[in-house]
Image 1 (cartoon, rainbow over the protein chains, first blue to last red):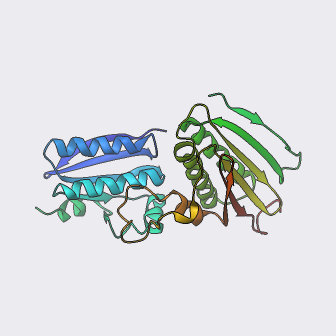
Image 2 (image 1 turned 60 degrees about the vertical axis):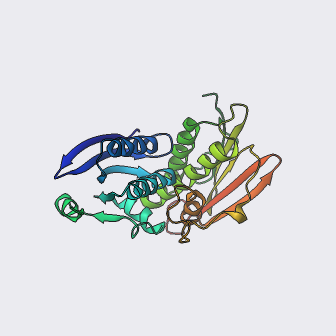
Image 3 (image 1 turned 135 degrees about the horizontal axis):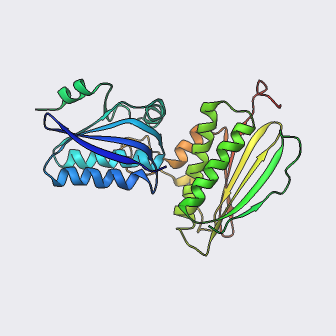
Length: 115
Length: 156
């Protein structure tokens, strides 16, 4: 039921591989803490890999938006990678799909960050 | 979790039924109601996408009841009822909170709200259900969520 986060570094970009559910009381706080940790360590280029996120609720969507604005306000960039159909559809419905920079493959996502 | 399951009118005919829960104001309750919604929607013959939309709408309504309505107050309960008729799946979620003015909920798609970290729950409920009605209780709020069963589905 809960969400897991694994952190990797590729070419100066911090990739957070998320799996499970991003919902109120489960993944939402985990994402917030993970993004804060990355920023606290001095990195502000973050790629959230959502390929193994099978469920997200409005709280989880809100948390993605908050992560996006937090990183942007710190002068950094946050992009999304590998959306599942469910997450993709929800971002479309909520008109957030065009707010986020969404990528389908890791290499082009990494290349798209400002160097 | 001190939940109470009350099967008021579970008919032998699987196409019509009613089940009501009274539950604590907790996230466990949210998960339980969501899971029941999924089971009831599957039983009513909805397709996979619609089942997940109904379950999500019900989750959002239950989160609102637990979090915004009852504010996790251990002295307050939520009730969730699921009624399957020949025409529809009707779900009612009620809390004992201070009430909700649903006419003054900001539009989450408006440019000034698009980057807000919350406020999308009722929007999603309205998106996924055919009908959404609010009723003021004394105290509390009851949301009625209705999804119509189409004639093509079995059991109708």
